[in-house]
Amino acid sequence: MKKLIVLIGSLVFGLILMNVYPDSGTLKPDGLEINKTYFKNSKELVADMTVSGYTHKKKTLEMKTTLKEKNTISIDQTGSESEYIVIDSTGGKVFSEKIKGDTIRSFESRSGKGIIKIVLNSGNHDAMIRINDDELKNE
Image (tube, rainbow, N blue to C red; front, side, top):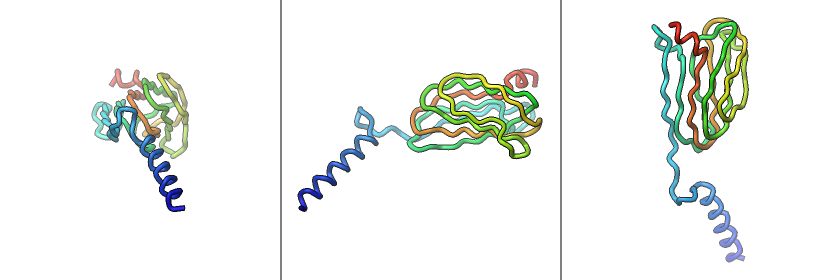
């Protein structure tokens, strides 16, 4: 009976190790590099953000930005699927979508400050997120 318990325990431990370590036998580091560009004369309102790295667990990033009545969000990304959620100044969700790959989406909202939440699934991430890119060029 003890041999059976040891055998099952070893099998479970082996399966856990196979899921944690990639094929090379080394553990991938968990870490993201995040760079933000702010709107002119602002220290908190983000015009665009780049995210690069690997995460073992789901992670949520937030950035405050400026929204207008008609908005565009441009996403250039490779790697794992991510969810993008845009919340306007009233706290209402005006955009929410899971995205994998490059895309441009349009949505309407109330003008003013807003928040973009980016929910990164575990895995590799390399993304460039731009909100109202035409507005940045005019600022």
